[in-house]
Length: 254
Ligand code: MG
Ligand code: MG
Image (cartoon, rainbow, N blue to C red):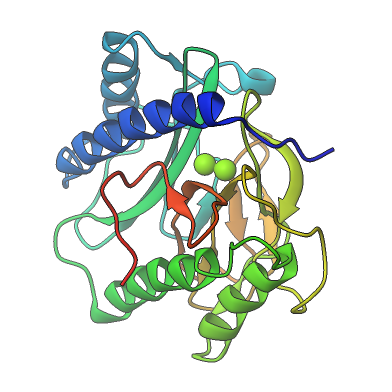
């Protein structure tokens, strides 16, 4: 069932989103060669708890950390570790969620580690652009398939792969609510969007194919062909016009 949030509930999600934006900004600043993903995770937990919020990923179905830290060909759900030391030229996807006053926010970004090749810069940029292409379609009266179609058209049209096994999702009191929000699809299909729906839209885009595999740790998802992958996610609300992006406070559509 897709829940519609009241203005008061949307305000709480706006506050959660705004806090997560601040956390994500600070986490990006500490991404550098020689840093361990465990250190970034510890910093994330400290920032979240310092602001009277709770890390939503920690202990979610047994996940052991407050962020997912996925390097290079890892798509999502990488487990932070003292043994994963970031190297110059890599890309790190940081996915983080928090709960403030009972309401969830979820956001992800791929960050360069030092200087990275042009091909990876373009991958990060196209992934980011595909989020905005998709989110722009999240208007009342459109359907969920319109979002995925927009993401898919932009990225596949330029030769990138769209990860299909993982999707965006509704979000609210729970991190994962209905509907699923795939990053591919047919226009005019899927659930009808209505004001007060809140979604996490999160394209995962690879330099190669879209097939993935899960590692023996039970969490980490990698591309099957070993190609690097980028991730960009925000929590948004469907409004009477273009969507509000809770995890990007102050953002205004052109
Ligand atoms: Mg996320
Ligand atoms: Mg998500």
